[in-house]
Image (cartoon, rainbow, N blue to C red):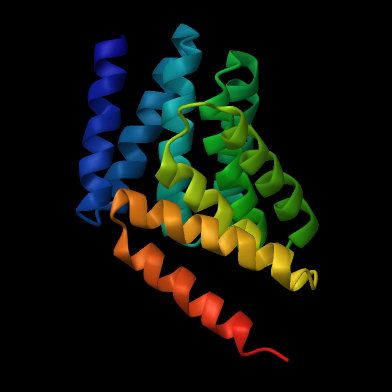
Length: 180
């Protein structure tokens, strides 16, 4: 069964990259059904997150959030800190896009805290958590803290060669500097 679900998840990844969301959704829904039926929680977690991304791409934030929240429950049960941080970060980003700042702040703070606790945390994942978290910190009026988070995110993006992330952080830092 794992081979079949892995194949479906890979087909869905390709379909999503080729902007074939309907095909990706079909393959992921099949993978989810198989993983649920077999009790394969690790594969179910991967498929839920992948489908959450496809649904998010389509702008269905509430449906994407429901998928990511189910995935988060599985991640917490599995106790892999990197997986929990990655999943809770996406839950936080969905809350942020949906205008639920309090929920977003709680999730993104948790993601940052978990990433900080992992010795070999992926620099890109950490930067991707710091960026939206800094937005919430800035909105709360804590510009110095937001600035520090943005500098950290910028440096991490530079470390992994993501120039778009560096540029976006620099633009936000300039905007912060120009505020009275």
